[in-house]
Image (cartoon, rainbow, N blue to C red; front, side, top):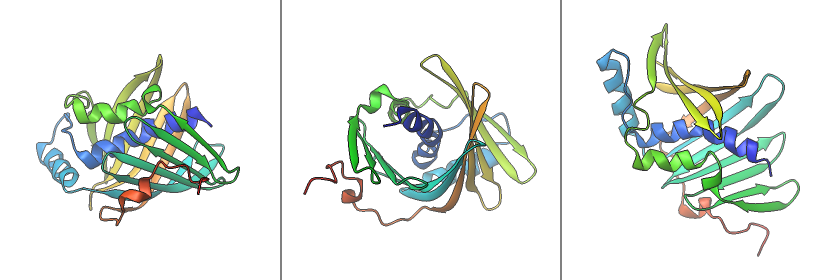
Length: 199
């Protein structure tokens, strides 16, 4: 299992989780736009989207699903990999290799996902600015002595998440958000942590 892949994905998608469950963001100005973003965030109950992940050398594609404090990441190209995360348990399923591994999300960047629910000040030091037709929210995260600069990019009109960029040690990973759906039909079994190779 690539723990680095899980960590990198969570460094990015904890920000989407923040968006979905909408704790307040302290901005540098323009209260009307901040209010618009807050209202947008409060309207979201469930979320799914496609994504394209690129680091300048490789490209990966997949789907992301969120509901009830659970996250499911489904890579579909070039490898078929499913990652499901809850507060206490994570599952990595490589469909190509028929390999299942369980891991403790508290020992990965995934733990920040859960801090969002308990620390309402977590995003108080986030920065906000506008540029042309886009809005930007940025924050620096320190994890295991590594500094990660994360930027979320919104389209302004209509207000839609479009891209997330992570910069670490001179490397930039970009997650482009495709076809966001704020009303997906996702049952609880969709996020099951039961070993898919058994039964």
